[in-house]
Image (tube, rainbow, N blue to C red; front, top):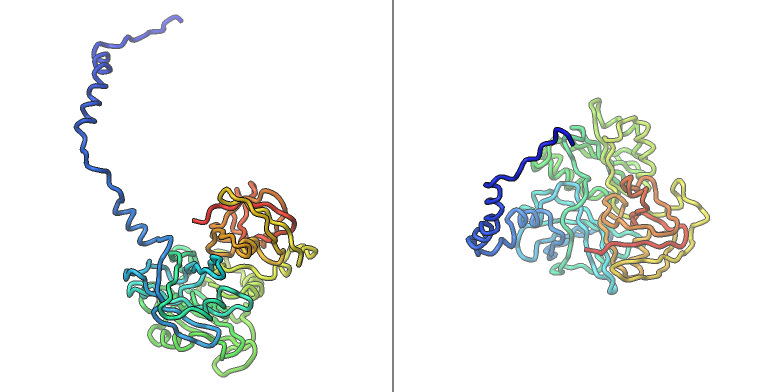
Length: 399
């Protein structure tokens, strides 16, 4: 302990410590009695721009044909709905037969519509789709509709995407592309958009008049119709192939934005691979459940058509429900009347993230949006997970 020096506490330090409690008491007594702010303006503004829920009234309906309708929505309280990026969607919540069902539906108008107090969503009848069938058969002017705020990342981002975009669309997948075209026309977005719109026949084409009007008002939007089941003057025939994309993409760098049914993606993935473009330039709108998983690579065929027991833990309650291997676990929850959290329904957003406690599942590679850590620690997205055995999951509360 040689050469070790200890410093003693000085007199001023002792006085400071002995008077500190009294000084603290004086400060407390002199403090304002005004209540703390219950809500900060910045928080209120953030809630306005990113609401969890929006309440609308249907103010108009446009029937494109017997199976496709556009619904014009205005806020119940008369305020403007949340501003959105062209290409985003909302999650529509609807009670059907006493069960709360939620489905993502693209916003088909331009962002400037929201500044005029409106959203427009377009619904196409899906065979066996009880949400789309319910909406088309039951919604009428004056009905109230509940949605989420704008969701999704399928929109143009100048720092990531090329200035020239080739949009490949099929069926009702044209709706987010139409929103982008409106945004370009209004000056809300600044990129060149070439749309390759695939349909069976010219009769199946949606929004042809709208695209014609947009193309007249801006030279940044071009539309090419590709018909698989007929030949028409002014239209391409067949399917949207790598050669066709090259034909209309031009010589400069371009991004591909794809939006359509699962069958289109299955074909298009192979065609895009032939083009050799960087992965970041290939963007896909991935919402909506995967259908027919047994047709996907890696699916064990012996599981097809089997029904397993799914044990569910949620909100301090436990359930045992049937889970068909042909449908994802989220659908099994909904069929049992359990309102599990969900948004994109395509395995990407992670809103339905749940813990797989036991059992085996099949997760399609192209819809596996889990973080690496979640894969290691056994978390899944029920909207993109198919049971391959009896299983047990822990589901978070549906906020």
